[in-house]
Image (cartoon, rainbow over all chains, first blue to last red):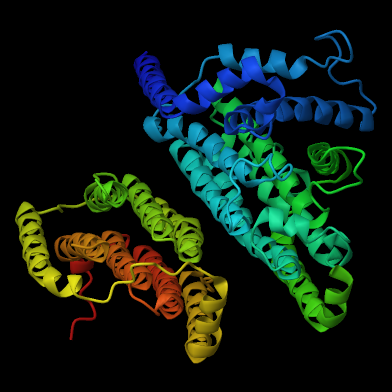
Length: 369
Length: 163
Length: 102
């Protein structure tokens, strides 16, 4: 009873705060809104170049929330087909393609249960924080020269620095649940994410070295002749594996191993709080797929019969599909195998690729330019 | 009004720092300490020192704050009598003295050759300084970090009790 | 009054907060918090001088990065010592650890 009133007052406070923030933001962006309204009358096609369109529709909010819904359906369908099941079938008519939206509404109407003796403030804030932390790096990923929300000169650095917030949020969520399975899962997640950040940094270095730039668009433009995966195949593999581990996807999903820990650090979460975590993980997957495509697969570049942003979209979708398919094809590994693999194999492999690049650097610069 | 952004960041960081020391529950203190570190990195972004800001985020928020929070969760919440008001008064008085002396010293600082057209950040200066000018210091720091990692593992490892 | 002076005042403020914590707290973890705050205050000072003094951008940033590295080593060792002390006597108050008093 008491926790219910707490939830209500908390949600009311969050609602009032977000309404106030929304009004303030609308006040701040009144001139872009007026610009968009003016363009709507005079030249509707030019809307796509305004900042407001970028933030709200294409690389921003709408795209970022639609892709996770589609990805969830694709994942369930794919895993079901591999396991000779049918998967979602009824909702929406054709192959159950509206199943994620049905799930979303189900989660919205379910009660958020707060466990007894938990730290309620941290417990309710950490899903919001998790989604925010997962969504913020997405603004740095370019989909074409214009379709990038924030073209920061040191975007690569900032992207991987913002990821450093995630273990903190996971640890807070795990601790505030006051549940031993949550805490074990949270500590595993912390262990995993902290130790796989090093191979990620090391495997990003070859692309940065070859392009001589820390800007995502600069890196893409340096791949005009040939993609960097040709020069840094080992780094690409290391980055892919470490990316799976950072996102707790299936070969590395010890933090939420449902046969050992009930559901890892999300055990005590229910309703839309759990939904926000899942949503955040899929948004993070989208951001990571975009970075992989940008660093190794030439980003938005491609033959000129399609515009740039469609090439970027296709590449991101392919990377997302490969990432999703690992869930169907690989068994879970043990935590000691995970840590040994990270420190003894991935880090030396990433360093090996850097050394190889140093050795062959004189020949490479002739090929690149 | 010119100093609105740095003053806002400073107020945020100062409140976070005081909360880190005075919060009744230790975990809230650790959270506020992480916020303080993030506020410092905002300062570095404002000063157009992006590498320093990112380094601050990765090392402090990504590693040290997590380590501290982990330790707080192991050690638990046993707070004893703390936070004496007289010392708070002493701190405030000391702050006023120090700031007062600085305000008198501002005459000096105003006459310093402050760069009016601030040079923009580039990585070449930084890497030259780190690798060539302070190369020996870099090696010493690497040895120090290795030794500290080894020492921390040795200290924190639970020894097998043989009977 | 230029912007450098503003940043010096801010870093003094953080230094004062850190010294206050160092003086008034007994819990070892809180004292570690205070030490981190003091180190960050020093680092802010270095960063401000790097920006506003001519010809010091590269070397001042290098020094700040070294300071962050040393602080990381210090935090790792300090936390390991705290965990070890907690294991031995299940409390982390510094004024109750006086077995090694000379």
